[in-house]
Length: 599
Image 1 (cartoon, rainbow, N blue to C red):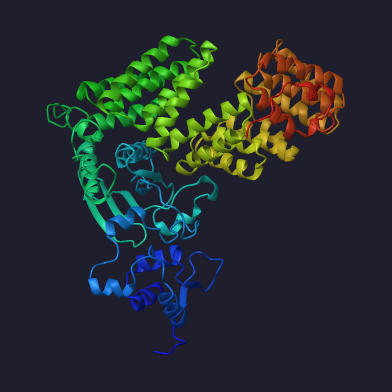
Image 2 (cartoon, rainbow, N blue to C red):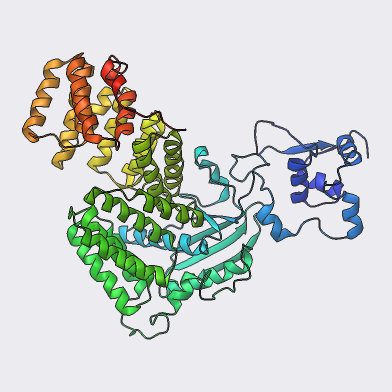
């Protein structure tokens, strides 16, 4: 073999060093093995190495802490690393195409889950697939011992590079793919578990009776994957009760799985899927129907925790959607959550609903529950760091704390967590909060992308309103005006849109139109709401028209209403609104009692 010999793949390099490809890649990332890329700027580029450089590297390895020499490996006849351990602590080969080979691995194995799609295109079929996805995401986490990253809209790892770069998602150790197929017979559920770096299939199965007994199907999936993914606490017996026990094992204890239910009865899972769809509609009648369906599911299986979680959501909906500002509904919701927690402890949706309840309690009672929901958030995020709904609500909590305290770190963390939530479910309505965070960070392009994704599934006026806001601050006044003119109901949304139309008129110097819109607002709402946004928007109109004294007086009233809470959000809006350009450094704003934001 010539000294000028060049090896042109990981396999050729590994064969020469008498080691496996994973060990070779790890030496390149950790021990300076001289492996180069044909395209240095492309992380997926093919690699090459020169024989003379490899020989020199082998000769110069002197560190006592270094990896054993390849010759020692050859003498022992044993593989250099244990394959299963490498899946946990080894460095993957840039699966996302986003990170270098030296990316540190998390302490728990990471599983990327490609959500399934429905066999039929009906809304009901799509929704049932969504609920199955949520359930699979939960059971695959094994109570937080596996980090599960649901990857939306993907069917294979080759497309995973679409994941946004700014969310901090780790490279996965394993891939889990699921699909619903429909032929001449009943639909079936197909599942596959793979190694992420090698693509090796560890397990696959087809459940032809999945829709007749989904709980039993989930139990088998959980059991089979548990056998193949090493995780902390492996001394806990699979299926054991107590800490670490499977949530599906708990479901299996219910009378439905034991065959006690009459053959003609609808199974609890199908009932839950229908109820969950109705509970998400935000309609009073649909909410009452959902409660009835969840109770039917509990009649069939009294230990079906998802039905208790569904009821908890319905009770909270009385406050969240229907405007009943009474704590008794949140008390009932907490009662249902407690029952679910006993049956199926520490689900991500349990924490999500509890934190939402505390936020609503804070709103209706005008209190401060932040210490409680941040304590819950810390525990929940330790168990489920990549659950979309949980990340979304915890991100909102961080945004609220930024509002109160002005910590730049809270705004950054809100964006990170809401970014994860967006990646998991791009069309979720809760991503509207992410739009606001991006807008305050001046990332208007990404804010519009998120808004467009949400509008695909939720063509609602409130989303059009958010889009109008983003376009206004970005400087697209024509696009902003067109969006706001579609916002007609409810009356509070119409008033907000009229304020923005007046702000646009002021920015264009149209004093007549701006004041006409302010008069229209006075007719619609003679008394300004005791919230900062009405004061902020009215002040923007006057500031845009150059009436700084009037604008400063209105801003002073708004800040006086807020006290501490809301001050930093109001200041952030002032910073991005061009109407305040001539006032932003004026004496009134300079006197506003803002504490210096913490890092």
